[in-house]
Length: 113
Length: 110
Image (cartoon, helix red, strand yellow):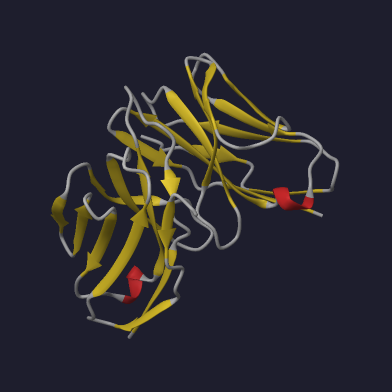
């Protein structure tokens, strides 16, 4: 069993839709949770970063963490064609600096006009 | 302020050859990590360097080695290349609380 599971999709939605992306994990030691966006042939770009259970909102993006269920989500409101990319969840423990990130496989999202 | 820069951006090698990839971290960042991202997969941690020493290592064979220089830049070396080493190699630089990735070096092994 992988430490982090993420449905690879692809997910295709119309412009303006609400998108829900999810990951589950097995290691209860994970304390920091991140969502990255990766455009084709580019490096991952950090979208959201959380370290506690609950919700964190940034513009059209909301990150949700449920440590009791070992489940994290990213919601995208009013999705745009420019949101078409691969979304990677990542998580880590913390010990005085960044430990290694464990990534999900990524979910490919296509937003069509 | 330049972010994380990697070179070369693309390269093609043949099986058995050796390759060196380079990374310059974001200004002020003292920790560099390397990741391998195979097509259609998430990045996998190779190793991390801090103060010129390997601090953590992922599940990669000894063919993968690295180095960090006093200016915090780093190199990733891969010996005896295999077809399966074809991937996007990502460098990430960090301080506690922030981490940024470069655009990667795409390695194709023929």
